[in-house]
Image: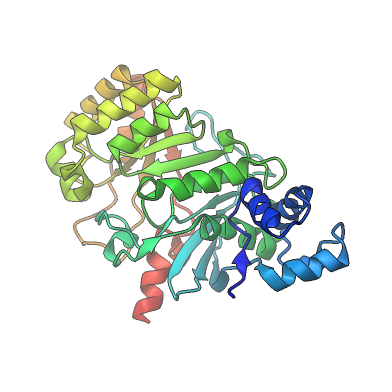
Length: 357
């Protein structure tokens, strides 16, 4: 009989398995704490459980790990991990160190010495094919389980010896196409008996799955929402993000407006500024209009150039002036620094390079 993996389960699920074997239900909370709070993957190290019960647990259950296949460290302190999954799939996570903040310039990260952010993946590959994302050039394989999502955090904590404080679901894959496992992972991460990371420190980024954005609002999910926008012109956005054919700007912005007025939480729009694509005066006017229509923040991103992408995608020389003009028109703008460019830290780049080497 195959052992049951307890990592990726919540307290109730662990308790339901223990009940089948007539084990005390209070043990579920203890096991949960050992797995998520103490990052233990060996039942015999769970010293507040009797030796007899530890032996029984070891015989019938397991605590699996995903394995680190490659690790690259950038000169700016960013660390990129490539994980090997049980079925041979490969995913990436990125550990982002604290960045300096300039409140006038509006950088996204504050200079908090103890802040440590991890960017996690939610799918093996991605079905959406965004032209500026290396993951979009891979074949989509499958959704990650809640275990595989959470274990990215646990393995990085174990490897780095540091406590993760912030989580962004911005790695490989579209989180809202793996909604149930993403939500389950967040609920386990929130639990005070485990990782204990509050929703205010968790951001879920989506390419714009409009119906699921409304579901997030209806379920009153309290994590932060970020939406990859990149253009307010349907034709250009479709060229950049084919998902725009299914959820065009009218449906997307309708769902975001619904989200704001239902939850009263400001969404963040992510916007990579490309030369001669979305950096015109007309683009600025559309952003200014949107910011008046929906209370929001804009996260402006300097394109992470790579030989993976089409050669027509280039960083805009107007990057700073574009941002300055938006701020002069009362648009809340943050700037995301490009981290780990020397180690292919952007989504999917390491897996693609590993395949081609």
